[in-house]
Image (tube, rainbow, N blue to C red; front, side, top):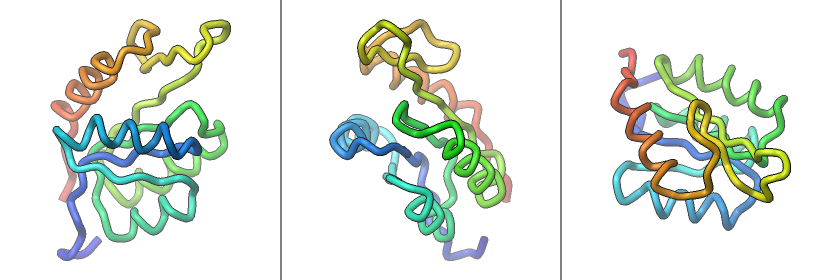
Length: 123
């Protein structure tokens, strides 16, 4: 990665455009954020940005999660990942890994803060 790389804080990856834009709207008040709707968009962003946190939305398949993880781990050393998964039978309730299942936005924001406080970018 060269000196011209943009130091973006968060990359949000998913396939639901409205959900992506809503999450970015929530997070961008606190952190710079970018959106990736597919692996091509993620790859393009990864070429010019350095990310501290990647949020993988519940619409991203396990295979896509691996692709994104492999790509960003190489391009943004020290990047953290937060997976949002749909909890079976809860009708859209989201679970942040190591969080209690909930759909409240403040839980997502708290988890993002926790992960970013512990994220270190390798130079």
